[in-house]
Length: 442
Figure 1 (cartoon, rainbow, N blue to C red):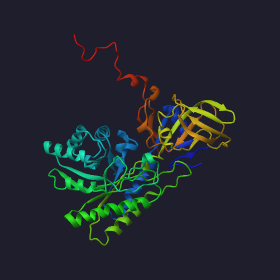
Figure 2 (cartoon, rainbow, N blue to C red):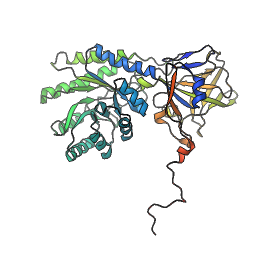
Figure 3 (tube, one colour):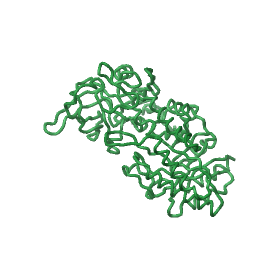
Figure 4 (cartoon, rainbow, N blue to C red):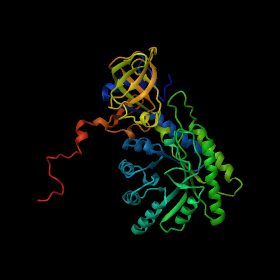
């Protein structure tokens, strides 16, 4: 059994996280429950930041917060010296409400609205990552009309394909994101912004995929982006002060996954960049990266209560939990794989193969297929590991299920950072037909 971060097994054979028994957490806060090991998040953040410091390279390590967004998470990121990526007005609002330093906020997205861009301009955020020509025209108009300056990066697609699931590979040419580096779009975007009065071009950004387990793709992407930067310097005397190579650093979901340590990713990036600019008399750019999953993914564990079981003779044994695709859509959406353990039977022998099913009214609501566990019974607590990224952030109220609570744990302390939704929350925004009809004629 692979344990993550501060997870351990106590004398009673129970799983503990951050010094607290999973059973205590389940009893105190109910299930399903997202539990975050904040010590592991801090450890990962420090590993990325310290590698740049050790290499004497100016950098920003920006938490890609679409992985998990909340006031408490943004406050933790700020305390750890991280910058922040947001991809919507809602994430930006949450970051500002959390008191996150606005000069360290970067705003991504392929279809930002005027309202979202104006919100960002008025807040004075540090950078907007521009995704398309439509957005360039939006920014030209909004910055001029409101007399606002803004730093930008141009998001480009370098044509590098990381070997990941098609749905989460974004660096190839056929992508909804960014300006193509190979067909002249990036050059056209460069000319469209480089002399703008209110827009300051910092450099380029790319994101080549997710769950990447080697450094080759990052090195290839760095080489292509630096090649373009060198061309802009030679032809136009323009030097990019920033190079953003995105995120996508892999984590271990199952024993098949072999992630690298944060330092290895960063060291190889730096080595590749230094090699490319070494003979070109080009100043070392500030390097930005965007870890998301690799900061919070394996720091998160979801606790479920086991309920019903069903045996299909000669086919499979189902065990059902009190959550499912409503709190973790990734198995249904991406065919994502997870590992799990019975939190109150950590030392018991695994004797039975189960398929873990959720309670949603969908045949495809299966969290894990064919996992070996000890014999289980109703009331046992199932711990599904590595659910810290894209669990809560992609959760829904499908079947009118309330979204679970989120708890941070560290050194024996635990606290709710997002409250469990109630049935009252589910109907709070509903409008009754018995109420006043909006726009009705008298």
